[in-house]
Amino acid sequence: MNKVAIITAASKGIGAACAHALLKEKYKLVLMSRTESVLELANDLDAVGIVGSVTVQDDLSKVMDLAIDTYGQIDAIVNNTGHPPKGDLLKITDSEWKEAFDLLLLNVVRISRLAVPIMKKNGGSIVNISSYSAKDPNILFPTSSTIRAGLSAFVKLFADQYAKYGIRMNNVLPGYIDSFDVGDEIRSMIPAKREGKVNEIANTVVFLLSDESSYVTGQNIRVDGGLGRSI
Image 1 (cartoon, rainbow, N blue to C red):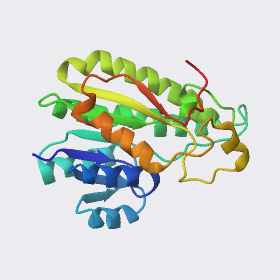
Image 2 (image 1 turned 60 degrees about the vertical axis):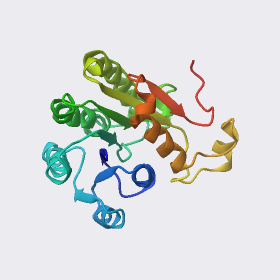
Image 3 (image 1 turned 90 degrees about the horizontal axis):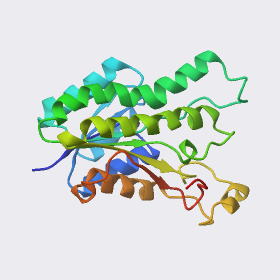
């Protein structure tokens, strides 16, 4: 039986790459994004799609319902998001910090509340697209570095609580990826001397959703060309 995967922020970049990679693995796909282009992608991939935001509880409920109503099950979730506010560390406003928290951590909490009761029946795997800065904080990405460090803690607590049900959760920590412009100065800092490709992130996601990684949970998997320095 084909597995069913939900992918958020799926219209382009890493999210779209994950959709293409999982289609090759015969997954049935349920795609969500804030832009209507996700509906075109869903049509191209013989999937179903919905316009919605990971910061809106009702939208997350709708995408879960769409998966169940269409395919009758949910086996995998890829929690991908847009980019949070940036700026000078102490000039970022309270509302911008709250926006980032809503986007980068509460999105995972919200969809997990919906997914766990379903996945308790047959197990499942959840992968969150995080950032290398969760382990190596970067002053250029203050909200991302801070809040995604918190996401790492949440993922570990989730594994403690739900691994016994066969429900796994892991983070993928990309470095600089080719879906955005990377200058020569940044590129020279990466040991691999190049930015990553979106399909390299997607391939890691495919592995973490698969039965091949059935004993991997609560982990942060760097895919950063060696950029991260912490051990």
